[in-house]
Each structure stands twice: as structure tokens, then as C-alpha cells.
Image 1: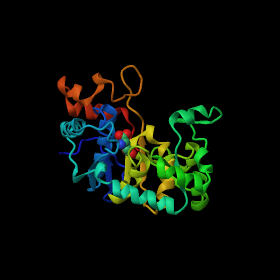
Image 2 (image 1 turned 180 degrees about the vertical axis):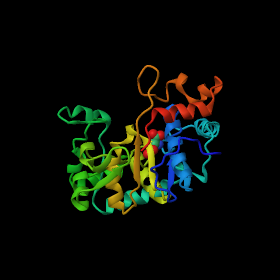
Image 3 (image 1 turned 90 degrees about the vertical axis):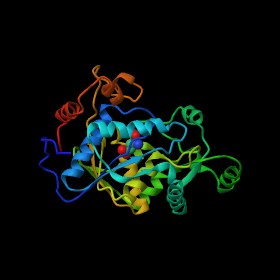
Image 4 (image 1 turned 30 degrees about the vertical axis):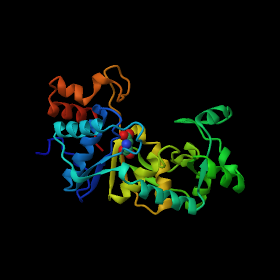
Length: 291
Ligand code: GLU
């Protein structure tokens, strides 16, 4: 496909690797199209790789028809990707090994609390994602921990204070927002492996970005805060740190952020209604200042 004429002129031209990493839990909307388009454009303009990674660890919510729709949407937009397509559902053993490493370092602990337990800790301060974990299971005695692990399923959480004591202060760079001081403590002791699926988005994403040689992570600003914890995991696991590009969100006609559940806003609906994909791409890029 011919590169469109919205050439970004401050891009480092050395070959880079970008990715689009959707979860097949619903149909894509225009916000996903912008992420994919910016990532594709950046990679192709540098002569680099653009990867499609299917983030389907949450087997309770992912469906094959949504994966097929993702590929149909990208093709409709005129975006091609470099093979192979990785599926996170096939990489459980790799994420388990990363978790084992965190446990061996003494920075991850099993957590037996339910959502209700955490919500009931009324004094818990709130982060961007609801109440911060109050640290209940961080304080379990080793014997109780071992006894409960033998009989109960557990999530695993990062002991953020212990981890930061090990790594020292960390930085990362966002192409839109500039240099960032990592502040993972603002998220509390976040989950690195869910009880039901044995891993978690934050762990799987850093492991795979490093394993696939991703140099530039392009995604919506709704994942900006998650980057602090991801930076900490990279430091603990000795993983390369990509450059981040968190772009502004695409809003619906009502001014609200788009969600996969808004059926009328999906790319599939636009396609079915005869929208012109080139016009859509141009409109998305026109709304989104380049960096
Ligand atoms: N899989 C995540 C999502 O669909 C995005 C992951 C990322 O870009 O880091 O929201």
C-alpha cells in the first residue's frame, strides 16, 4: 500500500518494530483503528516491522469470531502485518516462568482476597482502577501462606515497595508526554497473575513486547498509567524498555470515550454502512496531532 501523505517528519528512520495488540473480547472501534494506523505508519515509514498480537489470555471473555473480525477490520483499513501472529493463549508457560522469577526474587506474593474483601477494606485509598489493594496477604505468615496455597487458588501480586527497593527509581519516555518518572506505587500491589487464568495483562504484555523486539509501543492514553507498573516489571525481569506513544483517545459523537460495547461505533458497522476506509484513516489522523 502506498504510504499516505500525512508523513510524520520527526520519526527516527531506523527500522523499528511496533505492534497492535488487541484483546478479542469485542469488535474494534475507531480508537483501535487509530492505534493500529499510527503503529503501522511508524513501522512502515522506518522500513521496520508491524506486528499483530492477539491478547487472548482472558479465556473467559475472548472469542474466535472477534479475532477474525480484527483481521478483517485491519485489512479493510489497508493495514498489513508481519507474520507470525502471536496468540498469548499459547504462551502460558512463558508467563509462568516470568512469574516464577518474580517469586524467586521475593517480590511477588499469593493473594487470596476476593474483590469483595478488597472493597470491604473501606479505608483503602483509591487508584485509577478502584480501591488500591490494602496489602492484606502481603502480611501473611509463611506457614499460613503455604497452608492456604495448598488448598486455595490464589492470584499473585507484586510487592511494589520491595520491588522498587530492588530497582531504585525508574524512568520511561513517552513521545507525547515527554520523560516520565515511573510511579508504580500509585497502582498499589498490582496483580501479575490472576487466580482464574494464571497470568495478567501487565505481565504478559511486557514479556511479549520484549520477546518480539518491540521498540515502540503505540496505544491509547487510557493505558498511560499502566505503563508505570510495566516499567517496574521490565526492570525486575531485565527486559528492554520500548519508547511509548500514548495517543489521545478518539471520542464518540456524544463526546464520550468509545467502548467495544457501542455497537454503532464499531469498524464492522462503519464497513457495513459503506464507509470509505481511506477517508476514515485520514479523518482519524487529522484529529490526532503527530509526535
Ligand atoms: N490488549 C490490550 C487491549 O486490548 C492492549 C494492550 C497494549 O496495547 O498494551 O486493551
